[in-house]
Amino acid sequence: MHSLSGKKVVLLGAGNVAWHLGRALRKSGAEIVQVWSRNPKHARRLARMLGATPAWDDMPIKKQAHLYLIAVKDDAIAQTVARIPKGNGITVHTAGSVSIDVLAQAATKYTGVIWPLQSLTAGHRINFRKVPLCVETSCAAAAKALSPFVHELSESVTALNSEQRAHLHLAAVLVNNFSNHLFALAEKVTATQHIPFEILRPIIAETAAKVQHLSPTRAQTGPALRNDKQVMQRHLQLIGNDKDLRQLYQLISKSISKHPH
Amino acid sequence: MHSLSGKKVVLLGAGNVAWHLGRALRKSGAEIVQVWSRNPKHARRLARMLGATPAWDDMPIKKQAHLYLIAVKDDAIAQTVARIPKGNGITVHTAGSVSIDVLAQAATKYTGVIWPLQSLTAGHRINFRKVPLCVETSCAAAAKALSPFVHELSESVTALNSEQRAHLHLAAVLVNNFSNHLFALAEKVTATQHIPFEILRPIIAETAAKVQHLSPTRAQTGPALRNDKQVMQRHLQLIGNDKDLRQLYQLISKSISKHPH
Image (cartoon, rainbow over all chains, first blue to last red; front, side, top):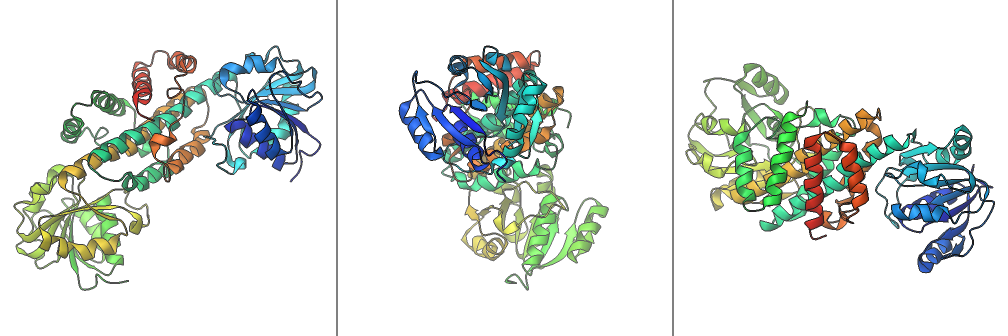
């Protein structure tokens, strides 16, 4: 249960991903020795929760950690790498759409990426052992150094290179951000008719539940799939003057009709 | 538990909706006296399961039922209504996007609509008490006649007129059919990189779980929301020559950026 005991970790970043990875690492027995953030308040808050020392601005990052975990905004990764001192540890970033190459100048012996493929919100607890971790390393020795961490954190670990991870990040945007926006557009449609969004929740849950065992290509149904022109025409009438929703409705319907279901 | 005992029901249709409503009605104590379908095989199969008499083609529909439940394809409803004999019962259709007016010529005393707002598949058992039922009736007396049925079937019953139901049907297409198509497009993207779709299942489940208590407008995240042009540009590069996916990506991103989150 505590196979990471004796492992020292420095967290750089104090947002959603740092919150979840920090907690999960500590739960697995690792020692979070330091939490650095650009924002002193954020560094202090997360450090307190994890029993670590806070740091900010140009305060020095501790030496001799086994793992330096960067969980800052994508475009701040490069400058954050530069803060990490020379050592035998591994420097890791946690971004889906950033190549491992951003770590090329890291002063540690090894580099790698751990991307948790889940929508993480600080304070919203989840079972981290179920979060798929996409892992990339600079070499076989780096893979060996990172292996105990990732396998202790999650039961779902997949080795992916930067190109694969970038594609998977695009796919995640489609299923998470874009689906959620469809839910928001549906909320807008029901609001015009004074229907509570509540009534759509069971079908949203079932839509996600169905593809937990089926392929979505096989689960597809609806007017566009069966080319039901009458229903689609009626929907376009209801959409009326909402030009964006009209375009989106037509484009997705066309895409469904072309897809090999 | 058996408050529908003594109630006689005729099912017209033997597809997914008839399968679920027939089972749920029977479980609540109603007697399914007859199952009619255009297809004799389908009529026999569902009738056997429900302990009913099968009928097809121009075979006569039984008189004196309390409820005639039409669950055929949208464009077959009108001709199916014409088969129902005169009587004191209520004729009901089960379609989301069809007005109650299609029942205007029904020979029974009352007419109504029961639309189960859920993705129903014959053979795939669900807790029907949790399925939201959208109900419309021709008059107050019809509402009284239908009330015991709907409240026995589900704990979520909402009165909606045909205009409201049509809008809700559009909203259901957005959250169910369109979201599922985004899952299918994501599956296609991951397949090009030899990544199993499996890895996306937890984030799909979490996306639906989040809006079970939050408004989707509040749950929105992602590059389009924070106007992260670099990530969006990278995604468009990955999409490459797939013109449909490119258009869809740009359109939904634009729609997210305009939506009041």
